[in-house]
Image 1: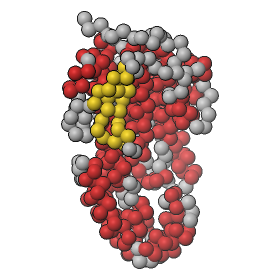
Image 2 (image 1 turned 45 degrees about the vertical axis):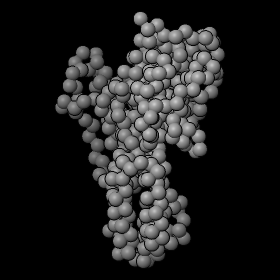
Image 3 (image 1 turned 45 degrees about the horizontal axis):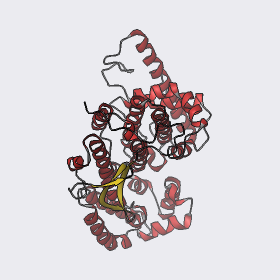
Image 4 (image 1 turned 90 degrees about the horizontal axis):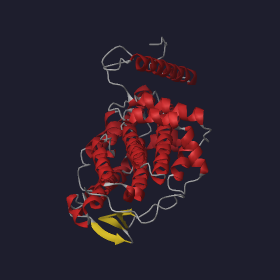
Length: 425
């Protein structure tokens, strides 16, 4: 391993930059070691540090993103643009990007095929922790999704299914970094890939449908907002307590808030109001922080409640405590939103699995995958030559649904509109 004298808790930008550079150098050395191992054929139980530790998918993903950026000039907002492209008509630029990303996608598939994915975020940095890996995974998932669409269009359905499954695995790997934001990003990525699959499900033979179903079952479980809430807000939510422990006065507390809480945007008046709401003293601020931790802990165990019950109970309790504690009032995330998002995720996954079974065995097979929201079968609605499965669960006033058309929209050069039923022999 490279010798880097890195402070455990860097206090300056230069120290953080040194640590980040050393991390990149370590990754490069690990990558070289992996190449050497591949060349010699010694792979079983290999660990760059000399033990029997399983390979870490994060190294593969970061190397894949580096390869992608070396092969194609990506704009600063590449992740956002690429994800939009997943739902837009295919064009020549998509083909150029995918062709340039061949090497990156090989490494991406290697990462998606690993079980272990440890992002090792710098939790000591709190809200200032580096989360650049999110952008890397978002870019790679989007490119894999684009290649899946191109492969579907060109008749390489087996390759397209492989890309889609790898993209979903990477999204679930991203969700495991212990942060709420990454879980939300991962849910969005999985939704995008699900739409690609849904638009092309009628292209698949019975064997390919069965392979897709097995692949979905074998995906990493990933994290959830319930798990991430406990990790981020209960297990390591000590930022405000650390601020209180080191503070010497009200003004010192205000200064510490401005330095360590980016959401305040250097607004001294707002920071002062928070401290004053906790009694204008260090001991009062510490009490507020302790109450916040107790509040979070009490709600972490309630994510098993049905979403409607969770929301109504939360609103009732929040009204009683938020007014007296500015830390709870201003910094508690929208927990009902998280509970609903976990429920929506469960329903959307079930919709895709039900659609595959219906595609294989006909409309009556919808009973094999009930709606998680109420335990009853999804509604089957014929639409042209395809169909739509619909849940009784609503999001923003509309039922959650998955449409399976007879041909995907926006894929120029796609096969004929009428796609034959898979051969069941």
